[in-house]
Image (tube, rainbow, N blue to C red):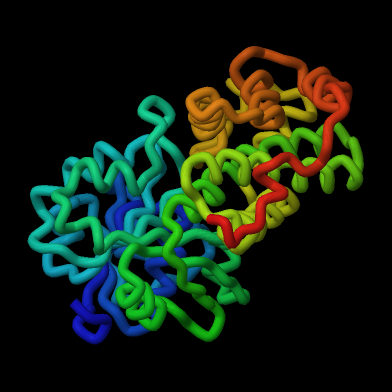
Length: 349
């Protein structure tokens, strides 16, 4: 399979991000089949050329066809992009597997971790698809609000894959004058950065909701990155990846941008709203809520100190007052800024 043989691309997940990617690729001249869980979403896209449920006000090209049937979405496709929420990723892949005819590029655009198994999305693919598929796997991650991508605002992301030649081919396929893609091979780092930044975005929203100031938010982002590096390194990620687009880049975006669903959840918590009320008032998924549970589990598995992640967990699931959680973080015992992992040169990885 080479890029010049790809004519039809299936995208699984018609949320804001999946729809933004579908629009981007369709404008490149490819036929796009976009799978939506809700039949009403698929019908609306085909009838009005707009996903008014998740990406309102964005016109979609006629080469984009939406369907609520998985077999129809992947039939005849030469590449697959998975953009579903992480908590349904496993189930959807199980349902998709019988309809996948032969190995083709599979791009994971989902940012999350299974909260029960603690598996990355690439681990789920490896477990559910035969080994001859594994070299076709890629991860797309980086600072990329769907709304801005759909408005053709300049965006730069990372595409990581096990096969460097395939990464180069997909870079050429997906890249546009406003959507620049860097290549890489670190699937673990790309996914750890993309998932954990959502947890830190909740923490950042809490800081802003409590009106604690820019100093506090800057410290939160910096120490949040330290926790991401600490866990990522233990899991085999390259430190350099977490300092890049899918780590620091995505972290800065989601911790400072009100377009982030996770930041918004944190902000509302900081303003005094309960998690139950927040979830009842939104129909979109804030991945950071589930990822917080998974991150705490991974920290325990690898023996990693992640005080910010633990504090977010306590606020979300243990009813801890957000201001008390911040106070506890600030009054921990003094320590060096650079622990052994953070001080280690990236060339060692």
